[in-house]
Length: 387
Image (tube, rainbow, N blue to C red; front, side, top):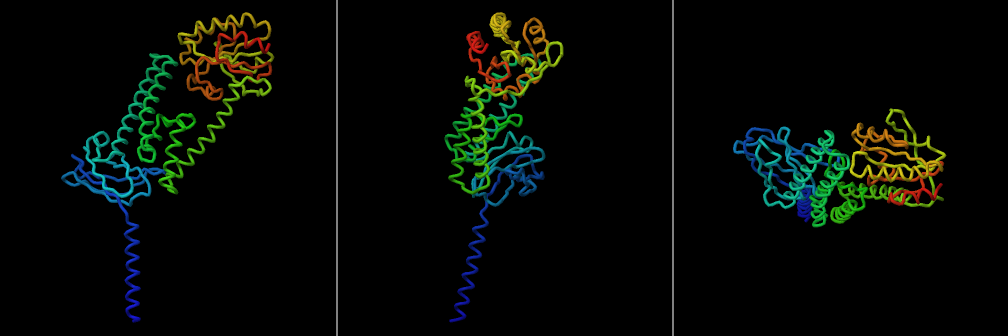
């Protein structure tokens, strides 16, 4: 009886060990054929939150076939095949066998997966994002060569980004818990996210994916990272919105002195905004190389000629990338005109929440912000209130 008991116990322990071993050895497989790649070294790599890690490598067989096996992830994860300096990105959702085909001469563009909807979506995302990056790069070159003006560059770039967002939004809404939704959120142009978590509309996409991943893959590192990222973005956005409310409200009783601005005038002299203290000041952001400029400056001149003798001044900041255009116009203006060489990339646009050009603010005689000017046709009445 004793002997049978120990035999039973031993068998039970062995069974538990085998069961646990099987349970811990869940794997996925990536296999397929890479033509013209016989003998080349192929790497399987994990694209994790902390960077890229090599999982395995092998020599592609004479007939172009290969096969990798690796531990299955807890949640949808991203991997890549690397052949020399070429990459092919794909997603794995737990245990599965993914079949792929590609040409070694052009791995990235010829890489295809068989019967994998999510990886078809990821390839679409890559193609769309790559087209946006290339198109914006081409626009930047035209802008640098003065073939398009500053406003046109911003408008066209914004249109390209919105086109990608429209495509990605439909994909995200369709399956927010999927790998493609996560992947679409984190596409970049020049290290800047296309979906801006500081933008209220874009933020809703982060919220949808974060909520869904937290529900279906709770406790995983990628879910935690996405949740933390989204909550931090919400906190920052709310702080920004409170600041925007300040800029957009008129109440004089909540005035607050703004940081000084010091920029060069047409003679190269540094002129500070604070040097105009003692006057009611119109802080005007504009570009001179635009169709509206002549009419805009005529409106300003009309107001300036009526109010200058009552302690009214204009501090006009040009965001023109073309210094020559700015100087030609500015040299004939009676108010203070300076130029920010950072042009449309100026940090002043963020500081003052300038979303459109032209935009202006009225400052009191101590340099405190009073109000934003939304309609220049009402400028005379608005300035007169504070003189």
